[in-house]
Amino acid sequence: MKKVFLPVVLLCLATTMFAQKGNIAKAKTKAFNVEAPDPQGAKTLIEDALVHPETANLAKTWFEAGVIFNKIQQDETEKQRMGLAFDNNLRETCLLKVLPCFEKAYAMDQMPNEKGKVKPKYTKKIKYELLNLYRNYSIELAANEAFNNKNFEAAANIFDVYINIPLFPVLSEENLLERDTNYTFYKYNAGIAHYQAGTDEHIAKAIQYFQELTESNYNDKDAVYQILLNLYLNSANDTANYVKNLEIAAQKFPTNNYYIEQLVDYYVQKKENEKAIVYLEQAIKNNPNNEHNYFLLGRVKEEMGALDEAESLYDKTIEMKPDHIYAYIFKGNIIYNKAVDIDNKANEIKDNKEYQKAKAEANALLEQSLPFYEKALELKPDDYENIRWLRSIYYRLDKKDKYNEMEQRLKELGF
Image (cartoon, rainbow, N blue to C red; front, side, top):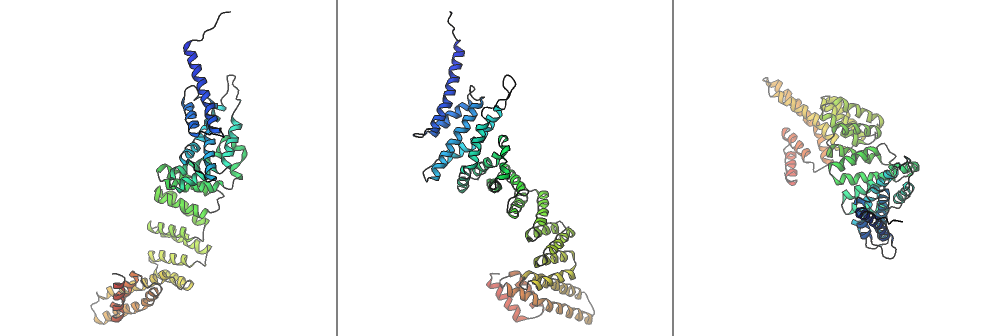
């Protein structure tokens, strides 16, 4: 029988492959060694195997890498739970590698063999590993640690691991999203972390999460909408989606004046007062005992020039809430402006009798406005603008003592 000699090149390749496969086994031994674990050594060996051409294209390599990274991060988390020193950077690095490794292993495991058949070898094991990761709170501890250290990017990326595990194909039969009451809570925290991270990419992710939460079973949708609106308006500069979600929120939370006020402010600035009125009238219908909605409607009516209606709405506000300072001020303003208008026109009258008559009418209105400003001053003694209004009225009415009193108040306030 003749001896068979392998070509030197093939022999070297075989030796290299066996060496790399041996390194995978060594990495696993270092990670799982109870007596003397060597997580850094395990990490280095398995990372080399992931990029080596002889092992980088094997499902086994990526599966074992996922297992090893998962073991390392779990061990560091266990140290934290026991109050021992732990390597948080190592934990974060390994935790963020677990899911990508299992995704790669799963994709390779679904590839048909030489006979065209798919015979998964690692799929069930991947499922077990991911379920264990999902349920053992290590993600939460790692994310909270990163967040408390103000490493918001790391916190966001770690929370993403939790968000993405139930979406993994092999876990679809588990219906984790239907049974997990914590999922939306983690998604909320993930959104906050992305928001704090602040880059365009993270802001986009935060918007995605909060937008999804509006259609979820999360128990505080009010908070979700307020953050989402802030993101659209101040971070993404997306006015269209801001207004769209603002209108939805106003319908979902008719008793929350925040959304009504923002809508009204937006439509008033856009000179679309009719739309503002529609929302305010709906808000009053939904909650007729909320005096502030009457006040806001009064402001819009005043903006449109319907002064009599505005006054009536301010009166209604005061009737419902006698200490509503701004209802007094804006009611006083309407009367004051009427007086100023008459006074200005009086200056154009040449007939002295008619001039004196107009002046008297203007002064009568100024007197009529006084109680509203004075009540507002009683409610808020340091309101600079209100004191200025009163000073002006007292001057016009030649009430010198009151005028001097307002002058003194302004000096005491530093004006």
